[in-house]
Length: 149
Image 1 (cartoon, rainbow, N blue to C red):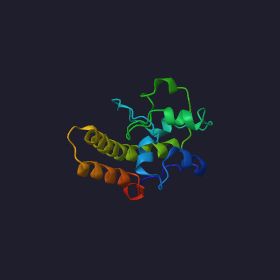
Image 2 (spheres, helix red, strand yellow):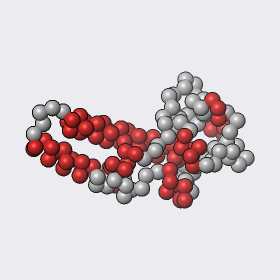
Image 3 (cartoon, rainbow, N blue to C red):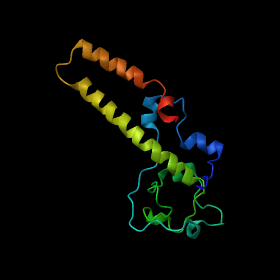
Image 4 (cartoon, helix red, strand yellow):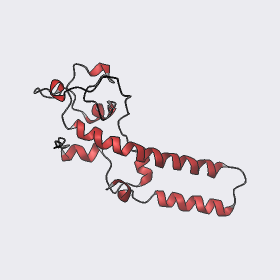
């Protein structure tokens, strides 16, 4: 049976993950942790890497700046400067949720990039301008249905 991941404290959850009522355009601007590349042989027993000592990195800004490891890794070889640091255990939940949000954000950013190209393309008509405006208005709507499963 799979074990539940530690819960992100509610006051931190409000800051590190996007609100379900956020507009898609604001979701574009929302900061997710960068993705790290997988490192061969990085999967090991998690008990070897969980410390009973308190975390040494606790500020939201520092936590958001740490690259999120691949889902099959609990080690941080992707962030060599963190070897002696300890992170809050709830960061696992944060990284998993960010992992699932990242591809959604990329698809929307790609779509928005296409819209910008269309908007600046030569020879578009008033109909095209109207369509682009309608699509931007749709993007301004909430993304709740896209994120909630």
